Length: 517
Image (cartoon, rainbow, N blue to C red; front, top):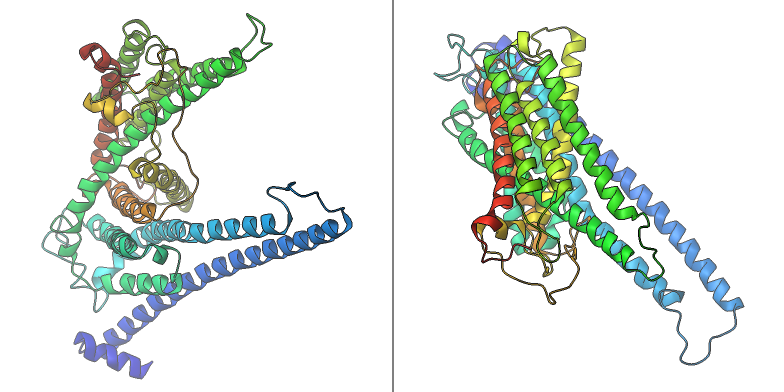
């Protein structure tokens, strides 16, 4: 320890041996923590490899049984084939499964790394960051003219610096991955031991970098801009998914009704399911509005937000029911499922907004208490919600930015820009859902897009955990996502969602010469 402390003393020009010893202990503690993190991820990788080995063993046993059965069975005549079975079929299936598994390694490890980053940011921000400005070697890096003991936002600004640093490393990591995978797509699934090592070194390195690189003078503004883009993309994905689901259910309903032997007036399962799902989502929206009016009123801003949400839901529901006209295929008008989904989602965004209001009198979820239970609940709920957002957004946004197979119906982007054109092959053709939805990354072109989306998500959760960089907004460990800026951003997102959906409804009325079917 003495030799290491001497090296630390020479490296950071610390004259006091006692301070040098404390700094040495701090550096060793950081190295031990990141090493434990690395070994934890390595154990997960080994567990995954063990599962793959068990699966491979089962496939080998299955192949052996297939070979034995093939030997006992009579040979087929010439010209007869057993497609998808036999040795060649098993080899092809095994090769396909192996390729699919390899392709998913990079996606899985990326998600794990992002989740670990969120957890590290939460723990560092609310448990260890406050002492960084007093630690030898980091005191100069973690203090600045806008964040010191004399600042009005101290010590919250110091805590936010921890989240900025971890988010910067995550965004930088996936940004570099996006660049590299444009040249070498196979690098997305390989070399994760080297990638994790580089990630750990980056975490250690940013600990000693000055605040100006991460606060409002540097990375924070980049995170704000791309986090807002992320919010807009979320609204587009929600509306587009709702349209797709309605189209899918209606298509199934039409196909079932046209099936030979179907009696007139019989219950159509798919159309009934569409109706019941719409009723359920409307019930969720109405229940949410009632709960907001009961528990979250009392402040002028919260009252205004809830009233705007209620007026907006009623407005676009009436617009969709009575002012949009269906075309000859009944594809555009009376899309009740989409309206109910958007209604439920904007009520949810309103709830997220008013629940971030840092005023206890009109926000029963807000708390500044520092007891252990409140801290665990606050940080746990935040971690689960942000992690869920990371997982689902990584899947849906990668599909949004990826060029899929040609579709007969125009995309939502065409409706938003008014560029949709007639693409139906026949005038009486039933609506068709032809979007391709995949669970993994099946093409090399998707790798860099997936990593770019992960970088975008890193910017988003950085803003969520820091009230969009507003250290004086009122966030606390028991309410980590609370704050005036976070409140306004979530409410604004609900307004943007309503505006986009209303535009998809009125666009066919404003441009009657264009086909939005």
